[in-house]
Length: 106
Image (cartoon, rainbow, N blue to C red; front, side):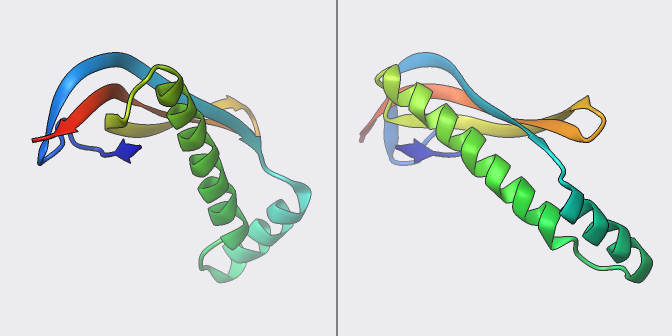
């Protein structure tokens, strides 16, 4: 599966547009990460626990989006974007979305 953030695929011709695909996950912070984050605010620096949480959330949302594209018969997803939103205090949704297409080499 080809995945790009651009509108087109250099070297490919889009033969068919399958439609919008999306994948999401809702994640919450956990007590251990919150303690580490609180300590980091005192000394500064990266909060690795939250970085890892976001990396995992992006991977899961992307995987779900690609599963949907595959079920639609696509071999590529173009114009891929990620967005986040707060669901409740301490929980956030990460959404991956794009356009599923069938593309062939020129």
